Length: 193
Image: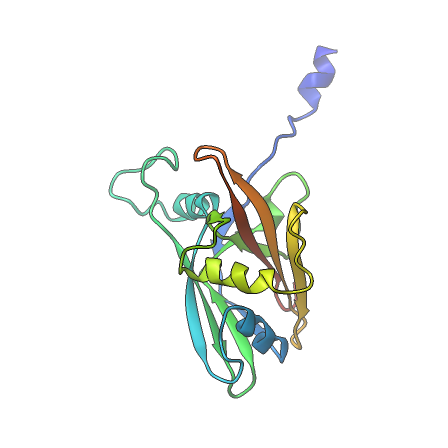
């Protein structure tokens, strides 16, 4: 019996690695995504999106860019932002950069060719003015919203360059502060992945 245990590697959950990557999504669906973020689909615009706690920690592990090396994310891991930029000319496109989680490196269930990033915890009161909170306010008005489900919202977009993007909103609990709320995850399969 001990021999079998020694031959089978332990199967534990593994958070995906962070990577720096510029992903460009091309086509008319770019304007649809831009509108969800509050942009006028006919004008160029950009928004900075703070990353959630675990995503920011994964970026720290990639960059190790503090004066003193941190051993866990409770020691003041630097905040991280992704920039989502919409351009309507010469053709509609959406550029998202620089940080992503490479889902091929997660365990279990790796997803080769897929990348994601997530929001921080968003209070159920939706009383903040940050772009994630404003996105959830807009999504709650859509027919696909399901307030009673764990996945409260999911919408997928396909782009003319063969890429895809999904926006998901999840019901979350902040147990430390006894609050209910949401988190948002954006997952992309880039062109040619």
